[in-house]
Each structure stands twice: as C-alpha cells, then as structure tokens.
Length: 156
Image 1: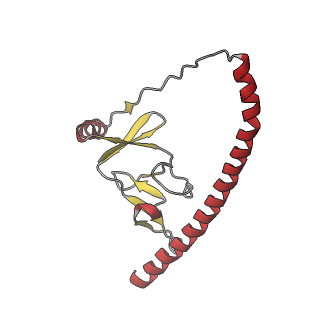
Image 2: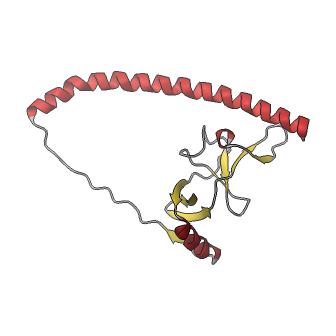
Image 3: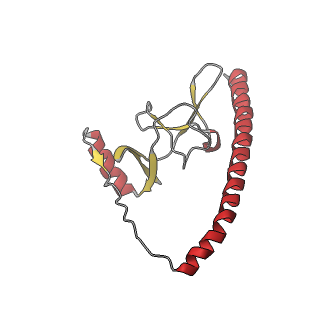
C-alpha cells in the first residue's frame, strides 16, 4: 500500500511504506520499531517525522507535526512523488460542510428530552473508560520503553 501525508490541506509527503520510529530515553536516539511501539512515522527523506492518531498508538509525546495519512494507489503515489520532487506544492480541496436544518415534531422532541440524560450518563462512562485506557496505555508504553532501552544497552 502507498500513502500520502497531508498537513493543513497540503500534501507534504508520499510513502511507499510506513516506517515507525521512536526515541530511546537513554540517549535520545531515534530507532525504527514495530508499529505497536511507534511514536511517529519517518518521512521519505529520512529526516521528517510525522504523527497521526489514526496510525500511531498513544499520544504525540515528541510533538511531531500532526498529519492525516491516506492510503492511495501506486499510480497516485508516483504522480505525487514526481510533483513533490520538483519542489511544487499539492493542495487537497477543503471539504465543505453543509448543514441540514430539520424541524422536529413535538413527539420526537419529548423522546429526545428523555434520552438526553441517558446519553450524558453513557458519555460520562465512556470518558472514565477512556481515562483508564490511557492510564493503562501509558504504563504499557513505559514498560515497552524500558525493554527497548535495555535491549539497546545489551545489543547496542
């Protein structure tokens, strides 16, 4: 699969694969790693590093530029690479959002008034679950970093 990297509606890179990277805490060196341990994605020039919540697990701990990564076909990848290699910019069209206005019948409004407190309770539970998941993820990330650092010391 091929990918285009979009930042602020500008296509900034095209990749023929995703190379995940992370920073080792011991010496701040950048290492390649499996996707589940990645903190960012390495750009095609080998220097740029990108963050995309859809592709990188966890928070953007290294403050990499946030991008959107979209899977594309090989022919589009080749076209994008050719344009970017010439130093030209490619911009994605901005999505236009249209708002549909509907008038609710009185019965539907009453049903919504009953359902609203239930939705708030569910949303509160989702927030709690999200916080717990984040905490577990941070602990897992810490343990993973320790293992990676130890392997760097042992095999480095």
